[in-house]
Image 1 (cartoon, one colour):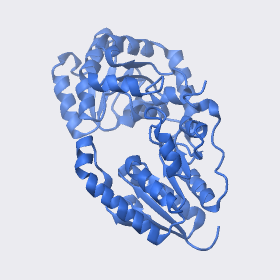
Image 2 (image 1 turned 90 degrees about the horizontal axis):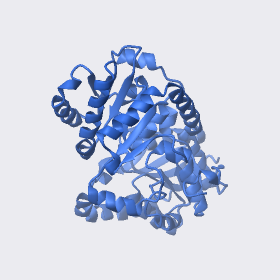
Image 3 (image 1 turned 60 degrees about the horizontal axis):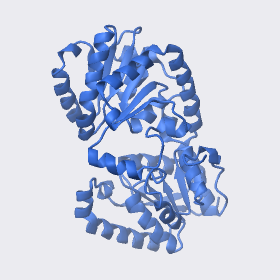
Image 4 (image 1 turned 120 degrees about the horizontal axis):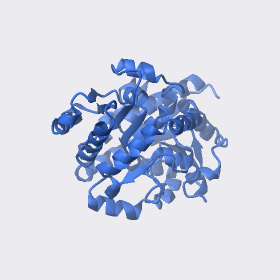
Length: 399
């Protein structure tokens, strides 16, 4: 590329975006050498050299009420970033996640003649699919983590690059169950169940009791079973401690951990979890799992009418088949959970085959995401075609 500095405007909206942005910045500097960065970033992006116009926390607003309350400020920040970017004239602007904020900024800058890209697809493939038309007007390319996301955008005529998943890059293709058990002070032999009821208070409220009631049934039926429960935060630890106190049968059978979710999953034979990113992480740990999810009845009524996918868990969405059993809403009962988990614990050969399948899927996602994202951005700046993406059969709506 030319000797002139590459000017990249980056806007990240939360800690995960800061991590992605820092990786992207490192990859661009390794490939180009002279790169200038401006926009919004956190500690990691600051360490890589971004000139951050606002603190990272500026965009970290959760919940509808909070967003409405802060909307005037957010709109003002977006206008000021637009003016700042137009004055600086970057070669490309990249919004990192935070789609509600970044897509509007991307559209304004693209209309003004600046090349734009968005890193991390919103779940437009699952619900409110009409948003894809607005995305097409906002970005010159979408950079996706998952192949079925890329296929969805390709089908809708949006330029796209599937770059792989950073979490797949982070996790090794081979893991050591015995070493993980030693680290958690678990016996090397015998069945181990990892239970991840969620990181939010609402998830503990809806999933905690049925999960632990199912664990109680399993422990009564299987005296040798050991159970590990990683608590995502100190608050979740207190809530889970209270739930366990009401179930004395589980005394001495359950180990409640402070974090260490990844270690717990690697140590386990089977994982019980609430649907979300944890399902992807369990897949990347190559572990058999049962996915369950329950929400408020009104939310479920609405979701059932809006969500367009056959599955809720990422392993099934990626594979486009039911590799992982799912229990949703009324199906989430202690009896059903215990029955499914018992079948998974007894399916030794089936678990081994699924672990091998997950390792293959892991390898397909392990693509050095930061480097591939940097390659895609360079292609956009140079006016070259994007790197090849994926075949249309990975589209969740195809076939």
